Length: 85
Image (cartoon, rainbow, N blue to C red):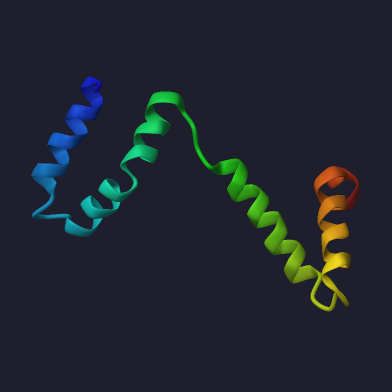
């Protein structure tokens, strides 16, 4: 474990009486928090994909079946520059 990790663990112990909910959240997501600071990894790409699909779902209200939605999602994914305008 690195110095930063040990410092965070120490801070969590000290902060728990005052910030119980925040400390619980950080503990629950501890590997992900460390992953970001060690390797700058995030789930931003996945969140972006989910956001695009949710937007398509809202815009596509009324698609007659799932196949039409699936085709539109694939077109949006592969030709996003053309469909965005």
